[in-house]
Image 1: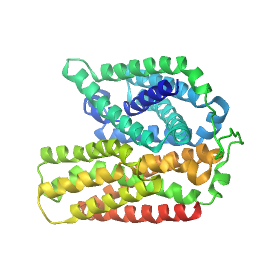
Image 2 (image 1 turned 90 degrees about the vertical axis):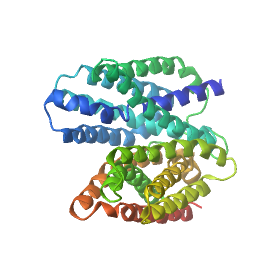
Image 3 (image 1 turned 90 degrees about the horizontal axis):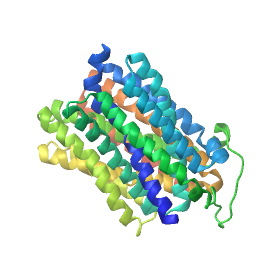
Image 4 (image 1 turned 180 degrees about the vertical axis):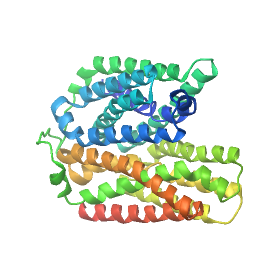
Length: 387
C-alpha cells in the first residue's frame, strides 16, 4: 500500500507540472484573439502567482484540518476547473477571473505534498518527484503544441490538460484511505504530533526561519531569472542567432530535469546540506564559465552547469525542513518557503529586465552571482542556527 501511495504521489507531481508552462506556449495564439498586447500574459501570470502565494501561506491550516490527501484532491480539482474555465474563456477578463482559482489550487497542493514527502520518504524520492514535475512541465507545452499542429485551437490544449487533471482527481479521491494509513505529522521519536497551526509572526520568530525563507527566495529568483533571460543574453551580448539561443536556453531546463534524476542517486551518499552546497558550487562554476569571453559552446556549457547546479537545491531544502525545524513545524515552514519562492519568481526577473534595459544584458552572470552569494550566506546561517 505504501508503494501504491508513492506511485500516486509521483503522478500528482507530474500533474503539478502540467499547467505550469501552458500559458507561455499558448499565449502567442491567444493574445490576438482577445485583442490585447502580448505583454498582458504578465498580468495573468501575476494573478496566478498571487493566488499561489496566498494558498501557500494557508497550507499549514488547511493540511492540519483536512489532511494531505484531501488537500491534494481538492486542489487538483480546483486546478482542473480553472483549466476548463480557461478553455471556454471568451475575453481577457474571464481569463483573469479563472487565473484566481488556477493559482489558489497550485499553492496548497505544492506545499502540502512536499511536506508529506519530506516527512515520510527519503531524500532520493524528493529529487525524483521534482524530476517528475519537470516531466509534467515538459509534457504540458507538448500537449498544447500537439493540439495546435493538428488543426485544433489553444482551447483544446487547455481542455485536454483539464481532463487529465479530472482523471487524477478521481484517482486521488479513491486513494484517500491510503493517506489515512499514515500519520500526518511525525515527531523525531516516531510518534504522531498535532500542534496548532502557526501564524506568520510566530513562524518568523523561529530560529533559522528568516534564513530559509531568503534562501528559497534566492534560489527561485536565480532559477527563474536564468531561465527567462538566458536566450536574450546569448543573442544580445554573445551574438548567438536567436533560433540557436532559444535551443540553448532550453538546455538549462533539461539540465535541471536530468540533474534531479541523478541527484536521487547521489542523495544515497550525501545528506541534504551537502547536496545543497554541491549544487551551489556547480551553479557558481556555471556562472563563471558564462562570464568567460569565449564561444557558443562554452556559453552552452555554462547554462547546462547552472541547470545541473539548480537541480538538487529546491528538493533538498524542502526535504531538510523537518530536520532543521522539527516535524511539528515543517508544514508551516514549507508553506512560507513556497510563498517566498513565488515572490522571488515574480519579483527578480522583472528587476533584471530593468537592468538589461537601462544598463546592459551583459550583467546577467553578475546578477546571478550576487543572488547565489546571498543564497549561500543564508543557507550557512540556517545550518548554524538549526544545528
